View (spheres, rainbow, N blue to C red):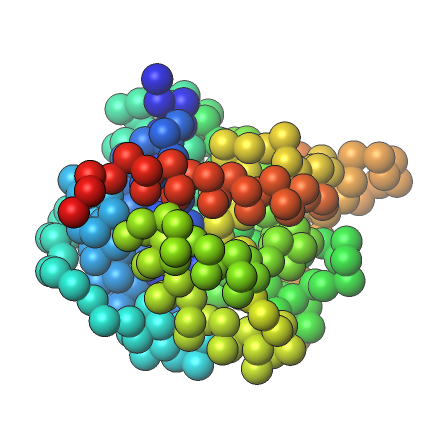
Amino acid sequence: MTLHKIIYDTDPGIDDAIALVFQALHPDIELVGITSVFGNADIDTTTANALYLAQRFAPGVPVVRGAAAPLRRPAPLPIPHIHGKDGLGEIERDGGSGKEDGREAHRFMVETVRAHPGEITLLAVGPLTNLALALLLDPGIATLVREVVVMGGAFGIHGALGNVTPAAEANMHGDPDAADIVFGAPWKVSIAGLDVTHETVMTTAFLAALRDNAGDAGRFVWDVSRFYERFHAEEGVTGGIYAHDYSAAAFVVARECYVTRRGPVRVLTEGIAAGLTVQKPASMHAPAPEWDTRPACDACIGVDADAVLELFAATLSNQARAEPLA
C-alpha cells in the first residue's frame, strides 16, 4: 500500500534530481506530480530538466510548469557554477522528454489536493513561490494537505545560517516573501534545513558504490554528481556532496532518523538578512508577538546521517536487484 502521495515541487538542480530518483524508486512513495519553479536555473531549464527526469525515472507522472520569478522581486540570475549550464551537471542525456501537463503549478496543486483531501504531501525543495500562490488562490487547501515538507533555511544549530549569504539559505533567499507566507499557513510544516543537510554527506566512496552496485539509477547519481562535487571542493567540502534535497525526501518516509524542534518560524523579507529563518522554540515563554500568532512548524535540528544514507543506498540497490538482466 502506498503510504505517501507526493507532489514534488522542485527546481532541478543536481540535488533535486538525486532526490527525485529516490522518490521514484521508494516503494512507499507515489509521485502524483512534479511541479517546476525557478531557482537553480531559469524556469525553462528547470521545467525541461523535470520533464527529462520524469521521462527517465517516473514515466507517466505529470510535470507542471510553475513560477518563473518570486512574488515581489525579480528572478535571480542563473548559477551555472553550481549546477552547470543545463542545471544537471552537463551530463550526456539519453532519450527525449515528455510534454508539460499544461496547467499552472499552483492550480495543479489546488486541484490535486482537493481531489485527494488529507492524502497529499507537498515536498518543496526550491523557492516556495508555487506553494504561496496556491495558498493565495485557495487558502482552504491548508486544512486538506497531509503535510508540507520543505528543504530550506537554517536555524544555527551547527553554526550555519546561510549558504548564499551569511544569513540565508538559497531557497529562502530565492523568495523570502513566499516562504514567510508558507510557514505562517495553518497546515502541518516540517523543515529540513542546513542544520541537518550539512551533516549528511554523500562521500565520493558512497557515490562510487552506488555507481557500481545500484544499476542505472546509481550510475545516473554518480554522473550527475561529478559537477556538483567539483563545486563542493571549490567551497572547501572535499570528497563528497551535501545531501540537501534528498534529506527532505528522506524525512517523509524516515522521520525517526531526525530530531525536530517545534515552534513558529518567521522569514525575514527585507534588508541584508532577507531569507533568514528564525524559530521561536515552544520552550521559550517570553512574548514574541510577530511569532505568537502563527502556527508551529517542526524544524529538523538533528539527524542520524548514517541511517539516512543507508536508506538511499538500500532503495537504489533494491531496485537494481529487481532490474531485468540485459
